[in-house]
Image 1 (cartoon, rainbow, N blue to C red):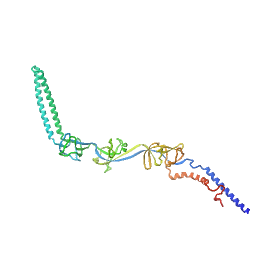
Image 2 (cartoon, rainbow, N blue to C red; image 1 turned 180 degrees about the horizontal axis):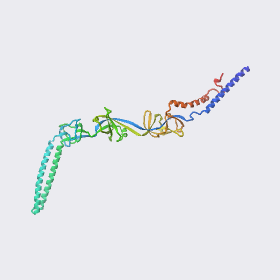
Image 3 (spheres, rainbow, N blue to C red; image 1 turned 120 degrees about the vertical axis):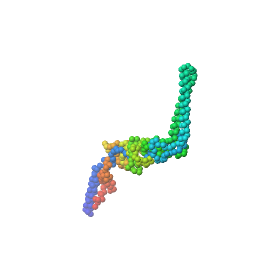
Image 4 (cartoon, rainbow, N blue to C red; image 1 turned 60 degrees about the vertical axis):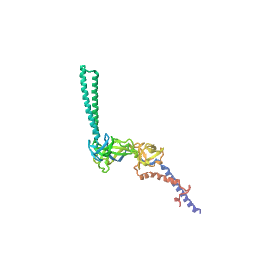
Length: 406
């Protein structure tokens, strides 16, 4: 019986020694392979490039005259005629309205009569002074009478000048009974009707002069810092985008509208076409350019003390460091950075939550596809696998593996 057990015992010993040799070989392979992460943590990176941020700004507005003039009488009275209506085109010097001239004409006749009377007094005083001067030379009159005649002549001349001035004022008031257009334009509003008694300066008609056109826009405060006065703005007719003109900012309202909180901007047009009539709806287009900025993927942004930051790779040591940046604005798939990064620097594109300052990394170009990234990290996983299986084996020491059991 002992003879039958000897071969079985020797077979078991052979199997045990073979299994122990295999485990030793596998453990040696695990020690020879580099540990996981020995070459640095693989990270997806991107190289920073500079660019200019450009936006096309579009606003809606209307065409208005550069100068709207309120035409009014310089004197008061009853208006008898208004010769134009809203929408009428007028020429320079054309009569727009008239007042009843009866009162002013009567005042003119009285002033002219006063001038004639003053002329008579001057003639009389001049003759008296001439006689007194002749008698004074001959010694037949006294000095007081001579001085009195001279003073009377001077008084008469002053009265004549006063009468002539009053006559000129009366003539002007007669002319003021008619109001005329000082320039060509279009009547856009009326303020009085025939038969009304109007006051001096009261608007009779509003005249949009033909010496310029503006495109007027209501602009938010955030846009005012964009285009300067020399930036050309393209204006297109809303009803026909092919009808265009070019203009520049001519005037910006210093105060916001109390209701809309927008600022009125007037754009002066250069040679506007005839289709740009008053009140026409137009669209304004302008390109806004900022200073040099850089854009990074949204996944590259993290935070440092509650401030935006990115992981920057040191090319000499292949380590990462956290740097604060200034964000100009956020977009769906990218972030626009105004300060903090220089062109040519390399930053971590994804996986920023798993890094720490000074950590060694293995950069993977951003152009690599996800499949290539997985392939690059696969060898490390295959090297670790045999060691892990050997270390986690549940078989007691000295027990042969199951695959060597008979």
